[in-house]
Length: 122
Image 1 (tube, helix red, strand yellow):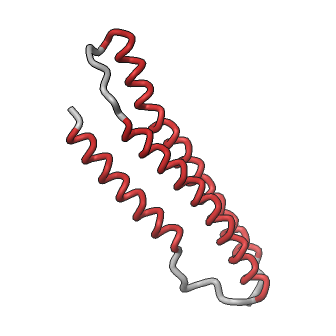
Image 2 (cartoon, helix red, strand yellow):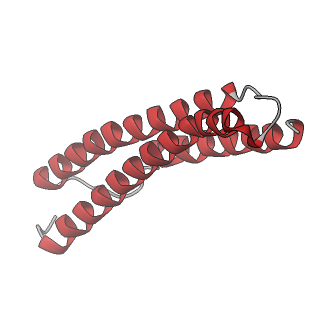
Image 3 (tube, rainbow, N blue to C red):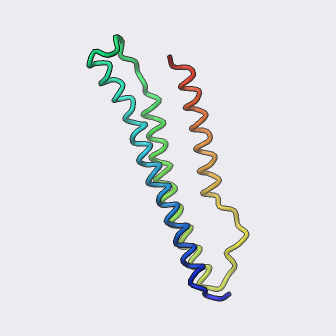
């Protein structure tokens, strides 16, 4: 296999895209987790008569942060494996990205849970 630098640069761009995805999930998870705290503070300031518990936002947000941590770690490992395979001259094409599939599944399930929560909480 030819050691074309464009292949390495493409792998680097893909790795950095996964890092951005992990950071975005961690940041969004933090916002979601703290949304319940924001609603409680709003209720205590007198804008809402009865403070309502929104414990779901803490769990959903924590799940997103953990997903971001997992994606960041898994993408680093995958990138190292990919560069190692390229350096040995092995093929890097043809394997599905289990990190991408797992991320899609996790976000789908979390999105469905949020929709159910929004529909059930008045």
